[in-house]
Length: 118
Image (cartoon, rainbow, N blue to C red):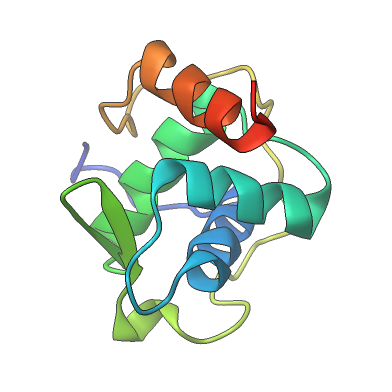
């Protein structure tokens, strides 16, 4: 994850933060929980690029934390609409090389399959 570039959060990052916030606030949210909550919120499945960039940026901004594969909202991420420029949406297929959380395609696909029940 980069620390040299400013963190520019987007609408996709706000969506991810909202999904983590609503998925399982007390016990933390698994990746499958986050994907399910994201679909409930936006009627869409996160792309791998959105997940990798979003997790990296939200961690760097101290909005979330991760422990043992579960995602938690930090105090700073509890407010609604914390993203200043949430109107910007990146191309969901393009990974920002400066913000890359280490999730493999296999982990992401397994979580999506777990959510979809297939």
